[in-house]
Each structure stands twice: as C-alpha cells, then as structure tokens.
Length: 172
Image 1 (cartoon, rainbow, N blue to C red):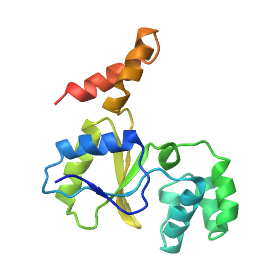
Image 2 (tube, rainbow, N blue to C red):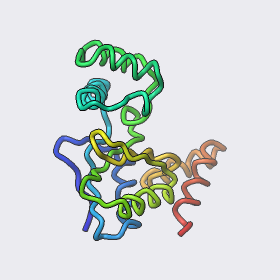
Image 3 (cartoon, rainbow, N blue to C red):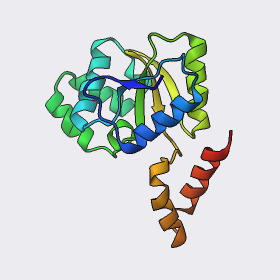
Image 4 (cartoon, rainbow, N blue to C red):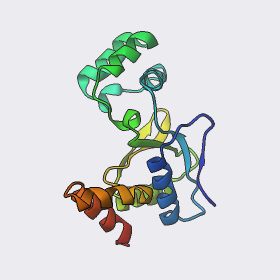
C-alpha cells in the first residue's frame, strides 16, 4: 500500500519524496493520507479561518499577534491574504509542512507515524481542529535533490545539508 492524497492538494517533489520515505518506514497496514501540502497565502488564510469557525484555540498553536489577527479578521479572506503575504514564508507556504489525516488512526498508529517522521529528520504535532497530524519536514533532503547538494558540496556550500541527508538516509 502506498500513500494517498486528497483532491486538489499540491505537493512539491520534496514533499512527495518525504511521503515515499515515510511510507517505507510506516507499516503498510497504517494508512497515510495527505490532506494538505503547499499552500498559497490565500489558502493559508482560508485554512486558519476554518479553524476559527470550528472553535479552535489559535493561541495554543500560534504566536499571540498572529492568532489575534485571525481572531479579529476572520472571515475577511482578502485582508488575511494580504496579512499572510506580509509575513516570512514558512511552513505550508514554504513547502515544508504536510498535514496527514488521523481521524481513522488510533493513538498507537499515530505515534508510529510521528516516530517515523522524527527518524526522517522532521517533527510533528497532533492538532485537534480539524483533526490531523501536522508535520514539518525539518532536515529531510529528498534523494532527487542529492545531485544539487553534491554540486554545492563540491564548491564548499551545502555540506551540512549533505551530511544531514546522508545521516538520515543511512541510519536505520
């Protein structure tokens, strides 16, 4: 069994490589379904406003200023898209975060997935509203990017990334 994704989810090559690597570690009887990947500022604004509309406590997830802005301005997507665009690009907007469905997983299965994410150099949290595992790929380097790292390494750049990749790739 491979992993699946919801319709309309956009994934980068690195995200696909991460999911392929995750599937190799996570037992096949534990489903892996991606519900969100790369987002535009507008999609991020819509996602956070969905959390607000469902009663999520944004202050438990985000810094106070970010949370308060969303609490004050949802559902004004136009305003929040501009606000989101003014912030440093990270997480889903940078292609570094993936959301996995967890409503069909028990706590032991979720922990297996979270441990596999750590083995790949990432970290994760379980968000209750809407329920999902939010993962950050962290130091993961996609095998398809290895030639780029080798090139940079040859001229003295990106050596740290190469070391991290090799460490993650060959540790059990």
